[in-house]
Image (tube, rainbow, N blue to C red):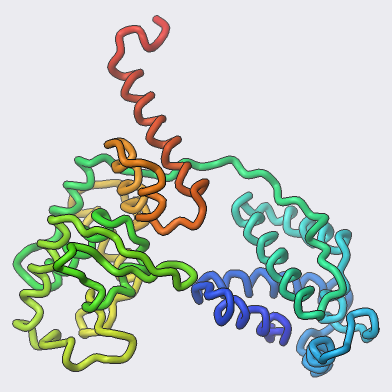
Length: 338
């Protein structure tokens, strides 16, 4: 199915103005295209018709309002949608048994879309103001024990540059709690060795400074020490300027991808016999949980994780409290009824 002009415009807005990651923007675009497909089938219209591009152009012209346009195109139907049409679409989705999290994201897509369309004058009103998002049961983030972290971090080889790279990556993920997308985006110049810190570019192009622990610093130093000895990586900082010089390189001397980090992690999980469902994000959860377990305050953890809202970080306090409860139940002789 071809991409409707209004869908393409919305997706460009997400990446160019809202600074969504390409992955998130693609997910929102896919959700909106699903809405388009539903309307196309319901009304027997072809969204590939050239009238769709003309319709969007007219709607975005100065002085033009949604009420003055009566042509029957998918774009016009979307932009004149009411709450009943949205409920019909959500009912259609419900029949496909999506998970609550997926349904919540699809509703979030429509909320963002109609806010965007109303602000630009393409839609006369926002039907999503009458639509509630179903409450989701909060799932506690998964964390592994300090002993399991130690097992994992000791798995990569220390004898070659790729093994040292992998040790540096895993140590950095656990030492800082950064996201895997932030890890692969690191450049050499983001390392502040004097202050033992990292300069991190996070979601929405927000930047923050995070401290780097001594073990992670040592692992990165040992990796960088071997780089010039391998012809694939010799003096990479002198030959790469576009977008900065990547800190963590793949075997071809290019920036490592998030998918590659996941593959490397999977390999080490298998080698030490840990749960294969552990992900790079698990190390982020473990970082936050272990800090709170050892007395760190919530605000500091919020800043380290790069969370915009404190409520996002508060879920870790529930996890920490649950771990305390589990320890109590296991250890106290009168914790459970006989």
